[in-house]
Image 1 (cartoon, chains in turn yellow, purple):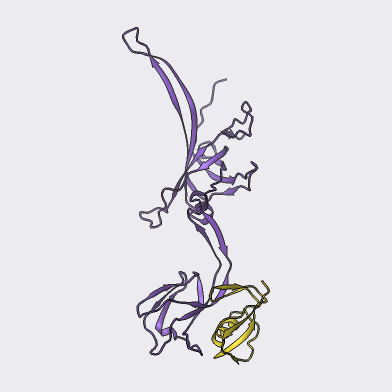
Image 2 (tube, chains in turn cyan, red):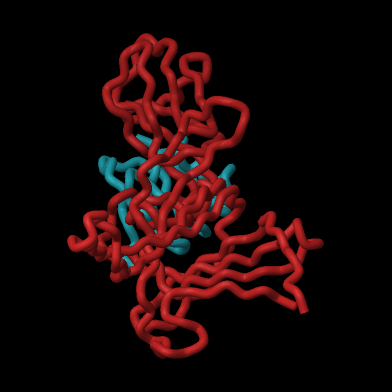
Length: 61
Length: 255
């Protein structure tokens, strides 16, 4: 599936989990597009292929 | 010098200050528009009627256990006022964004409630490995209340559906959520319209707010809703028993 690793510039809630600004998430491209439009990320990196559907949380809370 | 008659027609502001555990006051907060403020006093009485004259006349009567209460009708039905009278706890949610909020299994006609009200830029996707966006023609969003009604579903949609959206800031009060109901000080800053707007102040140093008994959320008639509340006036033992302030409250005529 197409997922992207994105870095948040604003706090955000994904799948019920709250993430602070600075956290990195792996999200589907549609969510990345939404986050870019909402100003929660500054750029949308190229899509990557992964078997993992779960979101990875950066340990910076 | 003879006493000059005066009259009273009161308007004014009611302010409340929560009493902290150490007895000091939090900042005074205006309770918003208050359309009625009434003080009542009562006491227990002991009386005696004689039995020697044949008239059973009352020969003694005296009171004890004097007490006071304050009744008010508040019109600012907001989280600050509600928290005080519902044993409520307040929380604030800043504006934010949500992705991957999973919905329950949807059938046509279902209405779902998002976790936040005040939503915008709603995007719904399905759960295929490359999520497909559900076109807006399939659902209707009520942005203010954060609800979605599904009028139809795409032919080959894989559930659960996930929602992404922005939401505005909000604040809430959770009812009956604390056992620590604070005492408050009550201050009335009055305007006596019957005497050219003369200022008058009433203070009650320590009051116990009662639990709200009537919260009218569907309003009828031709007036806005009011929230009737009651305060039991308590003895403020931090003030001297024989001092000029008394230990319950006072009324001040200014000027």
